[in-house]
Image 1 (cartoon, each protein chain N blue to C red):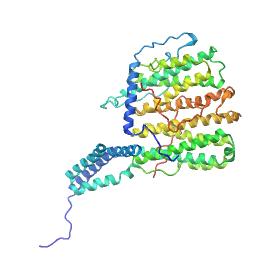
Image 2 (cartoon, rainbow over the protein chains, first blue to last red):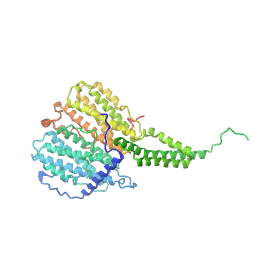
Image 3 (spheres, rainbow over the protein chains, first blue to last red):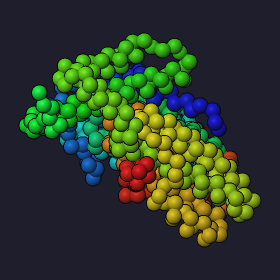
Image 4 (tube, rainbow over the protein chains, first blue to last red):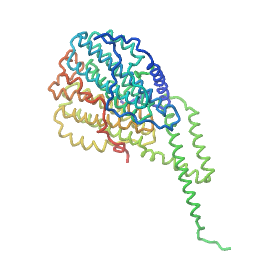
Length: 238
Length: 289
């Protein structure tokens, strides 16, 4: 326990690398927001994971805006907006995946679903919807457009994985992957966010998603707190 | 020729101007010190971690910044006053850092981590924990170790920012823990006490995030926050199973018994969609006085 602590993303130099990585991801997300949902072939109860969802406004405080006198793109809210778009795309994907899991369970395609797992999926989906609503409130509050499409980079992977799910364990593993990606992305976003409300929103949601992951780990038979420091290696960045 | 022992008459307006200039220069000196010292600290940390040789460009940047300041001081007030201002600025940098909000937040975080380590350590000496459910024992041991690593990381970052390392447990919650110790009679009592500390830590770190001026510190805190919240989630779930009379379901792996979990176990760990900050400790609570 006395070994030197290795925190790979914590020096200014590393943060620049991390910022570049998330910057690339943010650019991809920005491009992705214009991409059509090519695989969006919803069909009844076998809805594709990550299909479009509603964007009902939630009671979450949107960012109050950034300093208009700032001279950089980052300072005038550009990066914050890109983070909000990336986050919203991930939340659409999460809501859609949980919805697809509930539909599959309702159709008897996942076998017997334990009561606790059913409760988990129902509540987690609602919370991700609240997160999506919060990010969309940020976007529309800043004069932008609400995100209704899932993250275009991850969606094909999730669709492929979901198609192979045949039981509750498989669905839980897929959900765990999404929760870990989300919480890692929110952690990574702390490197680049500038707006104080956006920083708080990302931090607040990171907590809930990490807690979702802990419960899924327990259900899957693994230790619920496996890491000493939360990681960013699964952050959505491309 | 007579010599007067009476001091020359002081030109008070001129002295006021000099004092004002001196104060301005001191402010400039502190600003330059603040912008260059973290870079030097990063350089040092990088070198310690990688074992790499000194990056001369980084050192030159630091030296140039200092020389720029010294030139300005020399031109403005003369060498003696200039050098004394520079010396004062750098000599006071450590103590000044202790009043910096970034440093105070890190010191408070250390105080919370120290208390968490002590509390889990004390819990592990209780017979009904030490000889009880092995999953709870493993959780207490692992969590105590993780908190100690968090403490080390926060301490290292405190020093990097020029602050004094906090070595005392949190002043607000230490008396609360001490008062609770004699009342701990069953695992559920320990779980609830630990959950309180984990929630305080989680919410404190969340509340701190947007007050940081140093991004490195912010990301470190968010990283630790992402672990404390999982401790909290686990304790909430374990607490619910204990309260619900199902301690046999506290096991890893759960296996087929997952079907025996009550529905509430699926959501008790995350009761809200957004984490609040009502239990957050203010930055100065555990700061070094």
